[in-house]
Length: 125
Image 1 (tube, rainbow, N blue to C red):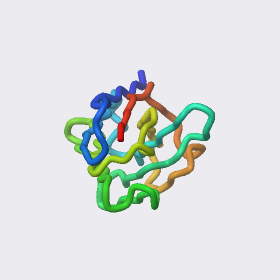
Image 2: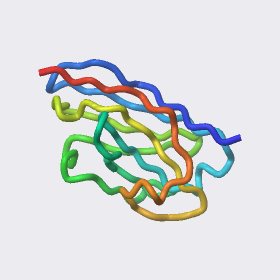
Image 3: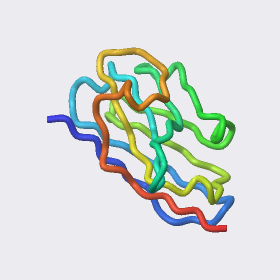
Image 4: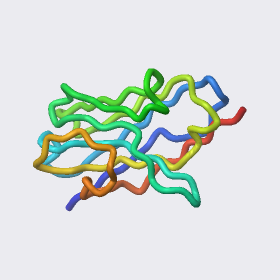
């Protein structure tokens, strides 16, 4: 059974920080490319960051470069997103996504097979 469960979302003031986690069920995790996406109502899902299966390579959307850091712990089947210097425009539902058996950096949602249910992030000014 494939399961991705996000946590760590919440409400913060602008300039604050949050750390999102995504725990993955499945022995395929260490060979999967992973990513974080976000979506606000009425808009398309936006790729935020992606990471290679080994964690050696990462990719970020321009809007979050220098503020967000994606990382993973393959021993714990867990993906992270450290979000610093948060802005009101970062407010969204955040989703983790997985593409097993492929080493790729991609912010295109069509690449990913499995998705979590999302965790909400609200940044107030």
